[in-house]
Each structure stands twice: as structure tokens, then as C-alpha cells.
Image (cartoon, rainbow, N blue to C red; front, side, top):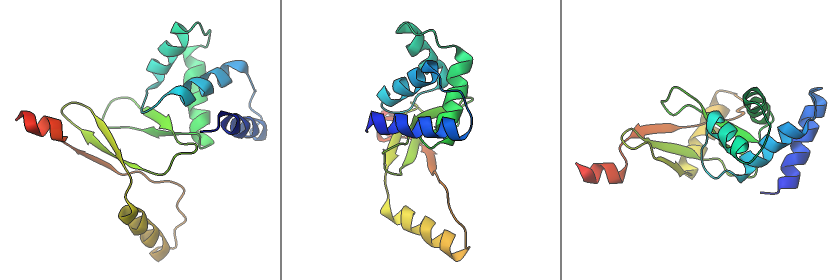
Amino acid sequence: MDIDAAKDNFTKYLKAGNYRITPERFQVLESVLKNDGHFDADGLFLQLKSSGSKVSRATVYNTLELLQDCGLISKYRFGENHSRYEKAFGRPHHDHLICLECGDIIEFVSDKLTKIQTDVCKENEFKSQSSTLQIFGKCKKCQEKE
């Protein structure tokens, strides 16, 4: 992922929405871009704090919402009481398998699903912005434990 392109995208979004452009918001963005996989807001806040950042918890939550709104991250609820996020900028569309036993999240790409979604939208004259499929069950490791 091109970090400079993500920063430019975020700067343009903030300017267009008349949001303040602050170093703290860009600290959150940089921390997000370093994350591989899924993360939650509190974990990100603790990660920033442990690296010496003075970013507040409210700034983390507010910035994550802005990053989601401008398409740099995706927000999910994987059957939990809190939201998780992941980088979206520069990544292909994918869906998730969520293990209810161990909590593993397996990402997958399916051209068949993409075609079905495209066909359904076309048939219904619907313009899609985004989609996500979450399949809950037991992963291979947990099945083998039985």
C-alpha cells in the first residue's frame, strides 16, 4: 500500500468535509496502515499509547469513523460486542469465515460471489457501494479437536 496515497486521500477527505487536519489524526492513520489483519479501537489506542503518542481515546474512535467514511478502512462486527477494523485502501474485496470456537478470522476472495452480487444488483437496478459476507462456524483446527 502506498502510504503517501492514503495520506493524500485522507487529507482531501478532511478538507472537503471541513474537518480539522491534525497530527493526531495522521498518527492514527499511520498506526492503522501498519496493522495487518483486524484490530479494534481500544487495541489501537493502547498501541499508540505504548509508542509514546498523546492521542486521546476519543480521537482514535473519531478518526476511525472518518477513515471508514473516506474508504481507507472497513468496519465489521464479527458476532462480538465491539467493532473491528481493517485496512481497505489498496486491498481487493474479500469476505470472512469466522470461527466461533477460537475466534480465528479467515479471509477469502470468491469470483463466484462477486459475480452473484453484480448480477443481483443489476437485476434490481441497485448501485452497490460495498458489501461483506460473514460465515460463522468452526475452522478446520477446531473441528479436528473434536
